[in-house]
Length: 146
Image 1: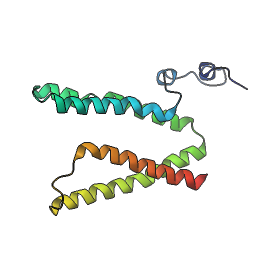
Image 2 (image 1 turned 30 degrees about the horizontal axis):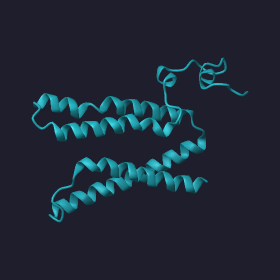
Image 3 (image 1 turned 90 degrees about the horizontal axis):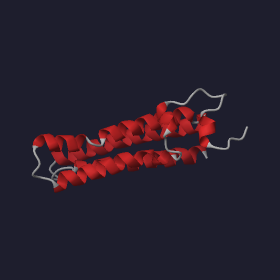
């Protein structure tokens, strides 16, 4: 059966009624993390520019990206549930590769810091390294199942 629109697909009689987060979701699953990344960048920039704020305001700015991350997790798990078996295997293998690489990166940075080879790991950019490692794991898994 061909669907004329995405909303018909979500509300067809053959499928259960959509959840609230499925109605307003992004049709491109890879873009679901963009609001979180933008909120993170805004929060990071605000914390660097607004040094004279009281502690409670800096605390609220630091927590600003968390709701966006929660939305990303809900959308990502929703995408995984809707994916076929091959796509699930690719994502699982990507996470299985990214987790040990991330642990090795954190361990190496901690040891280099303990050995006083590096002054201190800049934790602000560690998040970007974790995304890159997930991308590496996903590329390896995608190539394997291609």
